[in-house]
Amino acid sequence: MRDDIKGMITGASLMLCLILFFLVSCGEKRNNDLLAKAEAMESIGELDSSIVLLRTFIIKNPKHWDSRLNIARLYHEVGDFDRENIVYDRIMLSDEAPDSVFEDAWRHYTRLLSDEYKKTLKQVDSAIKMRNLETIDQFSTALWKIVGSFKKYLVDIDSRDLPYL
Image 1 (tube, helix red, strand yellow):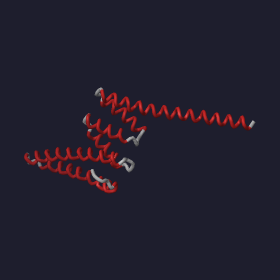
Image 2 (cartoon, one colour):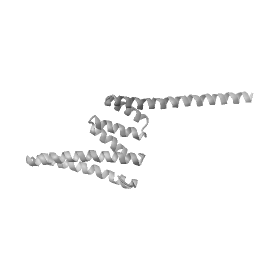
Image 3 (tube, helix red, strand yellow):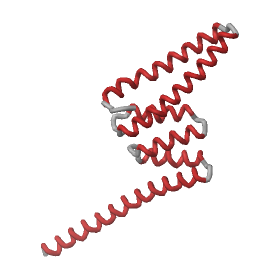
């Protein structure tokens, strides 16, 4: 009788393992399907749809760093620079991001800030030529904000002990 019970428990354990394996496999397949659909939508120019699919994938797989870099790239392509900035910001503030991903995010983020800085300087130059002091004051505040954005990452870069950027 004990052998029968052991056999039933072993059979039930095996069945439970198979069910768990199936559920995990289905989850992985759904995740792979999300990535494949996102790539397909991007390839036909449906960038907004690709972003939605990648967002869903990232929610389910927050440590899939390549997807985070891809969604930031897509945000740039559709002109949503604020969201692109947020994605890079979150990557750089994460202690779990691999150094290579951090470096990539840093390069893109500094490009964004540099572009914003250059644009603001042109606007300041224009305001100076028009002698508009109120506008000059607004833009000088914007320039300090950009400089402040760089400062918050300098500590993180030093703590990572990266060989280069």
